[in-house]
Image 1 (cartoon, rainbow, N blue to C red):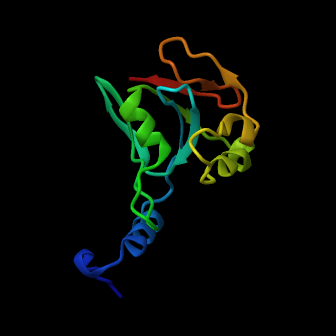
Image 2 (cartoon, helix red, strand yellow):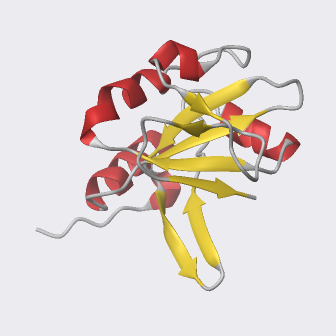
Length: 139
């Protein structure tokens, strides 16, 4: 049976469920950002992929919170400091990554909460993640 969804009459949470269940498997972007005050943020995003090779472009979408339509700290930080590190998630760190997805306040360092090791980046201000095998420094 084919199901048709009218997005104009469907709740955002339901649309999210349809999209996130339909497009699989999805890689997870584990994104490190920092705000102007120096507060560090680390958060996973399942709406992520490579978009272009020349120029090299990675894309992730920090969707708004469904419950109150507010932006997440990652997006707020990117408006302030236009840099991030996108790290890849492996099976070995997936539980720690999940812990970092909790809705902490802006001053909470998710590196510490989730038990990740910060590594100073070479080209951007946000830190890399030692436990991730691949870290992309992005502007």
